[in-house]
View 1 (cartoon, rainbow, N blue to C red):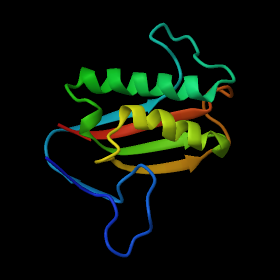
View 2 (view 1 turned 60 degrees about the vertical axis):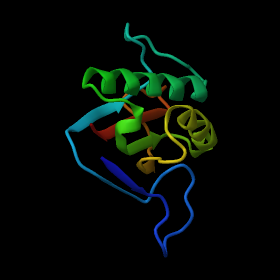
View 3 (view 1 turned 90 degrees about the vertical axis):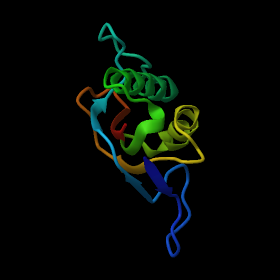
View 4 (view 1 turned 180 degrees about the vertical axis):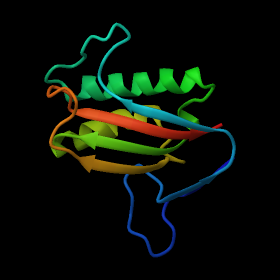
Length: 128
């Protein structure tokens, strides 16, 4: 069970996330996913949209392995190396995540990820 409090009174407007999500059920933690395909090949060199899409595809597979799906996500943590990729991230995210009941989310700009060509990494917390 999840209760989404997208914009509680007194908090600023949001863009695709909830300020608060209350939940119960089995917890599923998904490690940071990066733009690698099932063979371990890099996807999207110089193409932030392809990288974000691959990361969400990986998140979906990781969630599925635990019997969860995108609708079960209660919290995302997003790491971007370039904030110019934010609009691209939001466009792709909204194709995978409910825009009516979005999860809580933190977004952090980082100076780099494990592979210098990676522009994005996302981890998730879900409840199912």
